[in-house]
Image 1: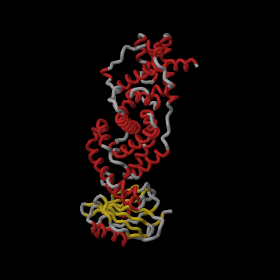
Image 2: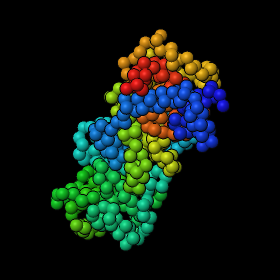
Image 3: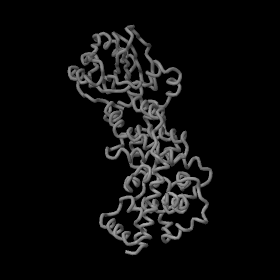
Image 4: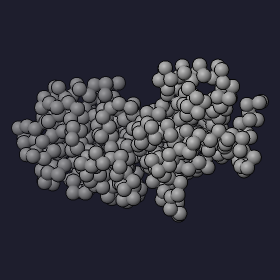
Length: 267
Length: 176
């Protein structure tokens, strides 16, 4: 091989990207060619110099926590700008259909978010968070981790997944059959989500322990077209979210309250 | 997102946050821009995680970070892009061995880092992914969205340019 041909292979050679036979050819050549050996030495020195002067960096802690928060409570995700969407096209062309579905949901999640969560991180922020979780649960394959109408299957499923034992009641006789359960995240914390049906509608009942023992009955609200009922009983906080008619959701809420037994703390 | 999906995302994508930030920082040459771009990219990744079919989470997230940075880079430019060109239109000139000795005519830059940061985007990204991240040509191709052959030729031309710019500095280092 001529030096010109060897020089063409220097980059893949020092990067370990040559086939073994070609790499041997280069190695054999440089044992008898000082000029090529020098060039390889120079190329390696430059690689080292770049690595020395451009070290790997650690992501700033604030960035990391913002991202972790977003993962666990993704309703804070902002819808994409149209400019960003254009740049995105090439890579995600194949995912166009998915984009329509998810992007649409992202739009729904984004609407109103800035106002209420920014205004008070408290109940209003949680209301947005549970509605966002409800919306996410309706996306394909996100509704149920444990599909079962048997509360004796659903309740123990949460063992070890959340640090409390959620009271699970079946209300099939009252027209609200239990469909199953799911581990979800609200406000960055794992919560139990129980899923009930009402005709063709889905009701998500989110629940987790509170630190207070007071009883709360928040007035019914509607967020982005979804009805929300919130109450606190026996040290558990409950949020029911659905697109069923509002009186139906109120009926559901009182059925759960009346059936509710005290939560059993696991630890 | 269900708990399982959160876990999957945390396992497949979150561990590459440092690599993502490193890439954004050197591509955009600005700390604040890099932070914003990475956050933006991760939120997008979250939205699109359903489209992730397993496999190389690192290449997947780095491609999203790279595209996010690229969009910002283009938006921030007032002048039309003059440094991006297709390899087919620019077959490498005959290998220019004389470049190594032609350094007398070049204006030396302060540092290796400066030389890398002055590279045109198409060159800069392959150099960073190869030298800083240590990615294979195949991985670089996945992140940048070009064939391996293009990675190889861009890298080769980028290094030739760096050698020309940095010849005096390199000589000093090699003799040190």
